[in-house]
Image (tube, rainbow, N blue to C red; front, side, top):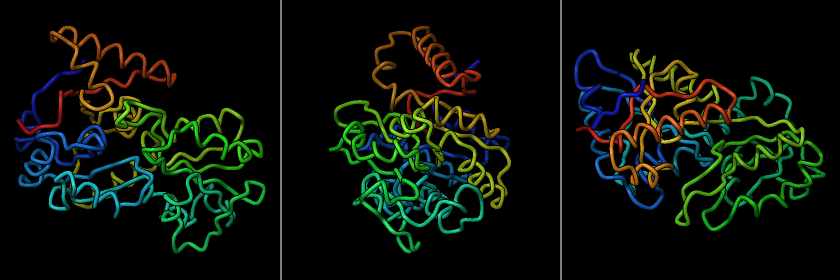
Length: 299
């Protein structure tokens, strides 16, 4: 059963608490436009107590531009030990090519959004192409705020018809925009897979990115991990699948629904329903978090 807490101090302040934290970016630290009050302070408190912090994001961009964006929300390298994005993971896998399916993808790539996705292949010797008929695989990473996921369906149609392998460097099915919650790149990749094409998922909730986090935390001496996020399907399911304890944040994707709750009983019922729905949609065990907080705070 999930226990609601008001701040991380309740589970991280003592000597026996968690010592390694994997914390989502969008929906936990900021909403894409505004920083969530108290979130940066919570990270600062963790690090002041010697806890290790990884900011983990399904952003299709590499770590450096994400770091610059986080800094605009008051979250700087002093607040975390590492920033790991699915875009950075994709770049490293394409560079190393030491495991399947990266070792057999070829060199010609169709970028979902060429202008934004080009940095992911910079320095790798890959050849971007505009015609799916010439491509060996597809790389889908970024989706600008002013462009809808539906607008990319036409660009991907020929690649889907050819059943080209697709690397999805942002598995999020939905994203927060100034217009509300909208389909994201993971939604597009699902349609590609539904047509019988191969999709390689890089990012939450899939195992590889959590393995990278575990390895980093282990090198720093952490042994008791907590994954924190606002997406039950990605942050919570991914953390649980990797063997982490998890903490759900009510703000973010489901913020409006939790804001409408008028009592703890309504809040608990809403979370239980969302957990059940997430499990049913994924045909898996419901992703029940150990902890939940309205927003990320220290106290």
